[in-house]
Amino acid sequence: MTVSRRALLTTGAAGLTTTLATTATTTPGRAAAAPRECHASPTRVRTGFERLAADGYRLLEGQRVGIITNQSGVTADARGVVDVMHADSRVRLTTIFAAEHGYRGTPQAGLSEGDYTDPASGLPVRDTYLKSGERLREVFAKAPVDTVVYDSQDAGARFYTCIWTLYDCMVAAAMAKKRFVVLDRPNPVGAREAYGPVLDRRFATFVGRAPIAQAHGMTVAELALLYNGEFVPEAAGQAVELAVVEMSGWRRGDFFDTTGLPWVPPSPNMATPDTALVYSGTGLFEGTNMSEGRGTVRPFEMLGAEGLDGRWARAANAAGLPGVHFREAYYVPTFGTYQGRTVGGAHLHVHDRDAYDPVRTAVALLVAAKRHWSGFAWRPDHFVDKLSGSTRLRTMIDAGADTDAVVGAWQEELAAFRSVRRTYLRYE
Image (tube, rainbow, N blue to C red):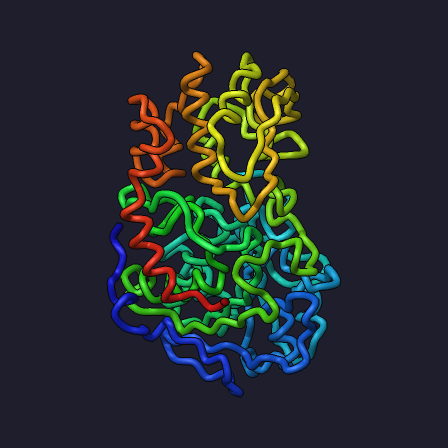
């Protein structure tokens, strides 16, 4: 894994968060957090946006503000943060920046909504999807903004593209000399630990720009701090002027359903927090000829293929994977792979979230599919290499390696990432 060892030796400018600050002063590479409220409710989490608003938006005072968000950027009572900010005279909101799936979340995977004027607010929406580097710098440079705010719900997986929109926009903001503010939200799967292989830089794409673990175990604010300390200076020539607003009431290990916050799917197929729980593993099935459950009400929890039978689920159960059972299942996807055809396979039922390892589970399922279904194949473009971060997963399974061997192959790089990750964690 190619990561800076600076994070292990010093606190690093980007690794500092001023949790007791009473002003919004920041410097390039140094993150400042809004002051904590002394009356925060102990019964639910307060997001970074809520804490920013409760502080009177002082962090944005005197700034022309653009916001990167989508339908998941909501308040505790499910109002859109754009609507709330736009209606508040203390915020000078000028531009909405949208990513994959668009600002309203209408397109499916691999699509966006383009540039348009939001009819509700009258604000311009600028599309960032598939833009990076100089192209994205130009988007920010042309927009009437001094500060770019990020507020979007993550799913906890390296190949979930919203976190690379965050990264690309941080790089572009640094290049365009724009200030950057990240409003934190819960990692929905608890984020006690990181799991899975670490990206090999040679396989960097929009489903993984930088060497982090497949299940990264961080919140978006923590990722922003890591990016700014480890990767942004290399890509942009300097760190971005960064501020993060932490949550209150969230503890590492808290799953989304304990937060008291409304779940709004951040993309069309991230239907529930249960989807996010399995996605950092079963997302790998998008690199195969199997159905990953798109076109069902349980995407990424329902997996299968035409011609597959109950032997696969039985083999998965026999593996004794912790925290999960597999039900033999049959379904007909309404779109996507095997659309309109009967698919046989397995439905994952996670019964112990603390014991469940999503990446190991997915590897075991892939190993079993390769052994028990003669029709198993990887996508011809080897997209699974981009998802897993190297050729290793694919070539080891093809060579007959078992689950322990495949998972064991990335333990050294994972341990190194975990060490770097700890430097940037902000919640106990």
